Image 1 (cartoon, rainbow, N blue to C red):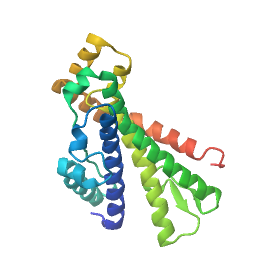
Image 2: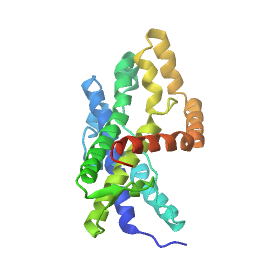
Image 3: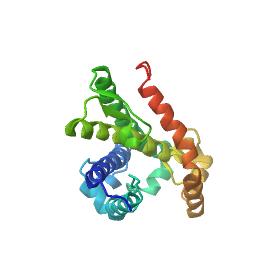
Image 4: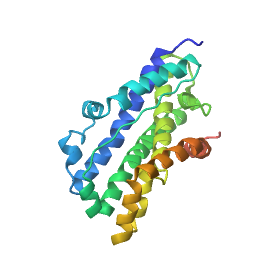
Length: 238
């Protein structure tokens, strides 16, 4: 049994919540721009978390908090959850390339958050405020001089950077039901695009995709996270 760091849990939850909201809002916004206002009518073209929580209360509140608590009892700082943005399937069938842009917008939003965190970290390291840390999410960057605010800020940047690398990578898995499965729709036309979409929406294919992703994601993610850290600290003497 380990002591639970509730402050760390709150930080993790805030980062998870807004990273997920940005991801889903990006889906909704691009769908709206391409002619599907389904998510817009649900209030999800917004960075306000309430419409997103209203749609997925279990995935965005209950499960993240429970998994954080259960993991914290074992000394692990971690949480998981999910969200979704609705769309019109008939619109997607008629506009497969637009559906692909909608799908890829979510991971792009996570990439932008990674870049924003990386810029802040690079500025802090170059200015002598921060120094590189370990590969643990909340410790990839550390303050040069320990202090409450400095420690909180570096922990925040580390979680934003690493969690969004994870969300981007996970959602780009090229299997249904993940966003990466829509990439072939940029290139397929006509009956081929329709057949691919039917496969993407097939419940059995989605279940198989989930199983494969959860079994193999660790082997994919850790090298990608390490590469992202190498890029982050390139030319900084680490």
